[in-house]
Length: 151
Image: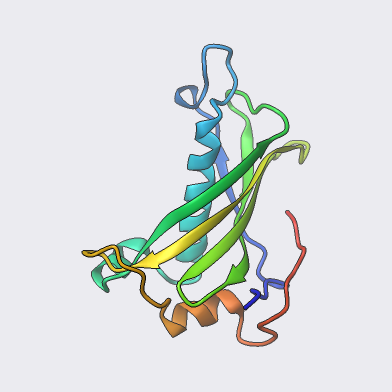
């Protein structure tokens, strides 16, 4: 099932701190993955689902696979805009398309896709995404359409 996100753009704002940079003063590449993880978590929260609550309901989301492309560096004190768009919704997984842009000029710094699986808390075995969460990601109307929306 393709996720319907036409009216559901989501952007998480964050700031680059000294701890995020390398000796050259630019964001260390792995930290973009952290920024994108936070955006996915905040996307869930915006939809009304806190990860701490989901864990109590025997549900965790884990990254199955990731892909990232780096285009330009972010630097200390840059404000970043990190998108988290669900582009595919399956029975036990979600595929996110994400971008990190510099807020001042909208320059694309990094982009990637992440396949996130829904698993049981204790066994880490796959489990179906609850219907309420599926409905929130798919949108009540128009599920089955894919949006090409960017930041």
